[in-house]
Length: 148
Image 1 (cartoon, rainbow, N blue to C red):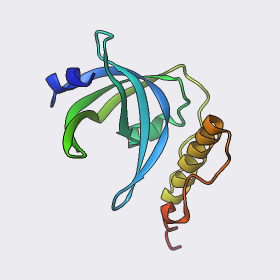
Image 2 (image 1 turned 60 degrees about the vertical axis):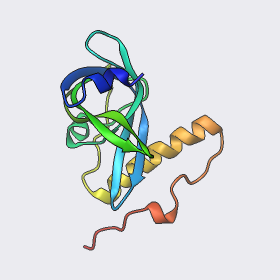
Image 3 (image 1 turned 90 degrees about the vertical axis):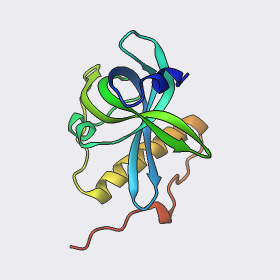
Image 4 (image 1 turned 120 degrees about the vertical axis):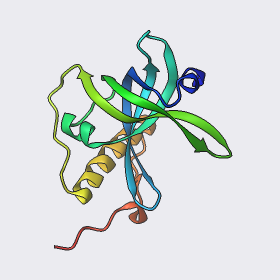
């Protein structure tokens, strides 16, 4: 399905997608992410069943997103390594619009508080999906609080 993205690699394009959930990955630092499902181009064609995108400052300005909301945005199609192969995703996201306009909580400003915010939402998602309440993030995932 991402063949449509491969044809336009490197270009800036407009998309709409459905917000799925928040996520956190850790490499040398924590990277907060958003799962966008049923990604469509200008023509309304589905170009990817899902993509993970970075939780950037633009998303932080929008505030908390809710599963099922439709997001319109522009982004650059980028190639990246996935395992031993390659894949295509969307980066450099700009011009974000969200529908419907729900009442939103602001994202916390401080890194540790932002981590706890995303952690809480992720754990709620897994509890709802599995019916099992568990700590999704282990102690090693929690960033150290900045010294005062």
